[in-house]
Image 1 (tube, helix red, strand yellow):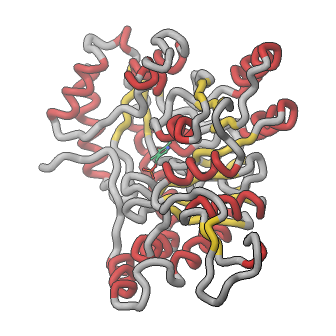
Image 2 (cartoon, helix red, strand yellow):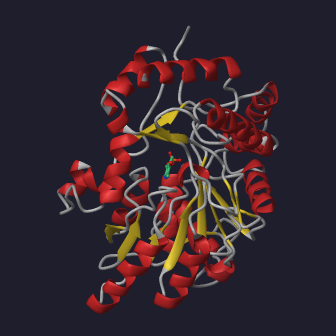
Length: 387
Ligand SMILES: *Cc1c(COP(=O)(O)O)cnc(C)c1O
């Protein structure tokens, strides 16, 4: 029996055929498939503009730049996220700060955000942008965050790397009703994959145009964006300093093909999660909590150990499961406790809810291809670990 991973891609013969067809076509990059993938995501989310890039990390970077984040600015996010949600601000020369999590959803706490904003206003240190992260696929309290954005005048980037296919108040995550830009990741452990890849979506044409420039060297072929009329048909202008963050046609073909099964992937994750809910209900664990009005993308199924009731430590339970071939993981080490962030002045103890969560959290295997048999193996091992 091999190890059951915490997450893995689901690749069909149709996915493979779609990628092979691109290999036989005229374009491996900058052809028709990337725009088709962008349209597929934009239509799914009900948003006007979608920009495919080579990772969600790149999407976060160009989203910050489009919102004008630069030296002297502050960007706030949650400590319980992948480091990329914070690093994107540092790439722009801005400073990062964090808002502690809601102890039930583990998402950036909108109440803590309101309190921190009130203090920051007095101190004259309001953030330029706030990046809520939809942890495990469950939307943050976006209506409250949006109301605060209007009151205090900051931009909002939703890091929805975990959340494509999820819904908030009956509408798709990514429609940008409560934000300026939403970002998705297509890393193989996420809900759909393009191997590496990401997408930034927005309802605002100006932000889309700025991100399109940043994605490809700051170069434009649009005469309207140029400083003077083109010298000839070959002409392009570099009008900003950009990067090469483009997605390839191969990746986009995989993405288009995967989009056809997105709803099925998420539905299967929900079936498996409900099964975990039932099978684990008597154990000394806190199971995932779902707020009313949210439908999670369910990237992750995180349980919290009731350590006081268990004769083992977090590390011992983790190692026990790994030794039995259960590829559990921990999402995430609070970003402010990383050595790079400590060197910027952050210290342990600053965000107690996040640190308490980290001391107890374990991500159980969850992916659309997880069989009930393998799930039963996870449950049996966990029961043994906690007995
Ligand atoms: C995976 C992830 C990212 C980064 O995604 P990449 O596509 O690997 O760059 C950013 N934020 C969160 C919350 C993630 O889970």
